Image (cartoon, rainbow, N blue to C red):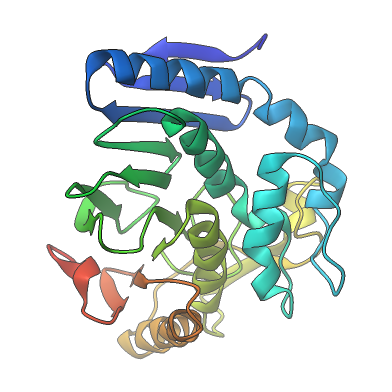
Length: 286
């Protein structure tokens, strides 16, 4: 694992970093179980980046009618997460951060007795909860100025084990104008892919939005010549509402299809929540 960072943060959490992958991991339980779990996560992490690099050309291609043939476990998770969305433009890279979090979490908890645990890959989070346990996750409304805007409390008996956030200002390009689109789903990879599509859907046609082909900004982008948002100027309240309404329609479609549990969308300080019981909106949104 040459080049990788393996460290303990001052509060005891595990930090794993190599290339663009940056994980913060925390497990709760007996000390010996936690230490063994961390060792398992470190062992798993050693091959993640190299495995992805070997299959990068396939991972950057849009998913079509035929499922991509991939070998690595993270790559397969990525392809599986985007497969339901193959009718629109999407590549397995839309789920990379969530898939990495899912894979490392699986290694972390394997044969261990833990109360709860999470693997946070830059805001895309895979979660483990034992019976009776819960975890509260903060939600950031503006990726340009990250600060807590609200939170979601996850319970063992609720089928959510993944959270992901996409939007303009995140680590990847966005075709939409959402400040953030946070999604709760069964896995982090599924949430990651869905958050990408929902954030793209938060959009409106106005000269106040400046776009540029992704390949002009990053020649290696999986989005190729598709336009991505590079700046958003002043928007009228009507345009903000229109953009958010479009995002909510996509979030509702994905929820009714059983792909996601819920979503919270933000733009210019305004919020939209798509959930059966609004459980994601337990605090300070808007």
